[in-house]
Image (cartoon, rainbow, N blue to C red; front, top):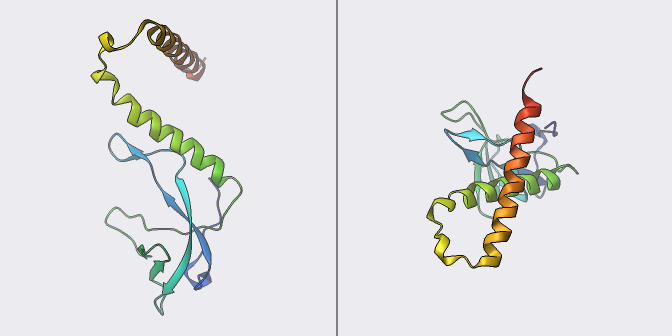
Length: 136
């Protein structure tokens, strides 16, 4: 992910910026792509350390407790693709949490056959990827 990160000095009121929203899993592990949002800058403090966006969010450009600070980026043509992949990942995470609550008695025959086929395809894909990722 090599997107152009704006420096504080470059920011101006009315400027459109890309704001990342990270999908996390496990113990605060970030997925490889964020969900990108585009927002306009509504207000800036004189030193440009606090930014108010048009949606009302306030961003402080300083280091947080974990060493990271919020970054604002120039919109990039790759961002929509990265967003769709991150959304798909988030959907898989959310849907996979629902699987243990499934009641098989509630699934009719046709859907059960369809689910079994799709689950087999997923397991086959994961197995193939796992074997390809192992060093030779």
